Image (cartoon, rainbow, N blue to C red; front, side):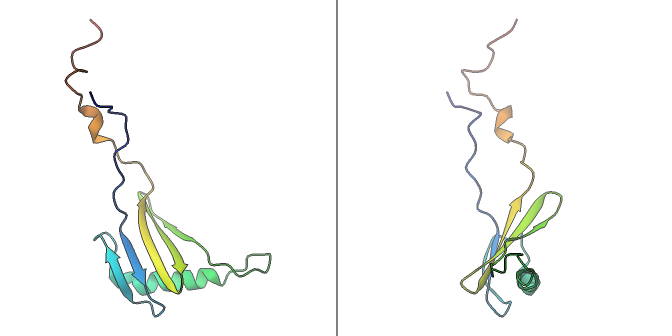
Length: 108
């Protein structure tokens, strides 16, 4: 008997790795257009110029949100990393499937 309420393993998030010149140096998945690498790097550069209020220099986490997904953009050691993550939970397709022990039981 399997537990149909158990979460399915997460999928790998589509990702880009962008160098300091705004060029894509690595990519995972097809859901992010690597031709937009310079745009992501420029947006993060502009966001990092915003004042934090306490005078400290910090590297922001930039979130660009759409209806069903978000781009998370962050700099690590001079490289910009972009992840595309869902903002809505996808319907669980395993709920329609029942194990043989669960079928036919219950109410009359």
